[in-house]
Length: 219
Image (cartoon, rainbow, N blue to C red; front, side, top):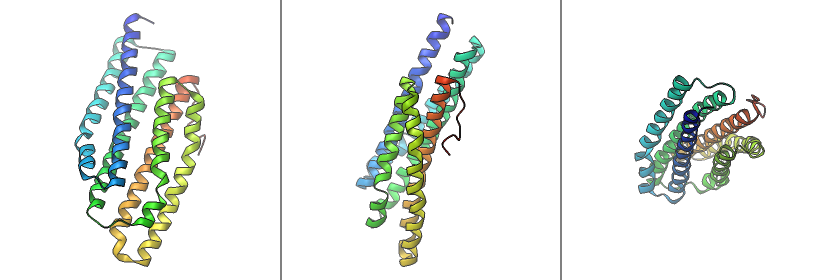
């Protein structure tokens, strides 16, 4: 590998960690805004979405430049391919953080639904841990941690499925709660999608480290 290619790949690693940090912060703040009914924090997440979007474009352009200039092969090519996929998944996670923040704004103007909030109370923490572990696995190329993230996805899926039932029961009991209940269901769904994307990245970590495609292995 040439020194120029190594330099560009090192810079790319730093950039993907930067967007990862931005996304993790957005997710954490959107969840905090929802829990605390903090409209200022929710709006801040929404206002900063463009930073993640711009970083995603910058990283994609950097990957394409490296492919054109250096024509990497083998492990280096696999790294670039994975970074392109991870970059896209992180940007989508940022979108879901914004969606949660938007729901937090809407729900802050309405009376809370304690029963539904309590039911999904464990979900944000589970998803936040998956995101954190995924980024750690990416930084350290930790296959064991990546596989742990993949196994965690089933528990998130289970809570999200049961949330559908809870929301349906709440609306049948009192139709006046429909809008709020559906907003909370949307939050549950957004968190479930973040967990799915974390799992995708974890699978890519295994691919980068071992060269094995394991997509759907844990379905």
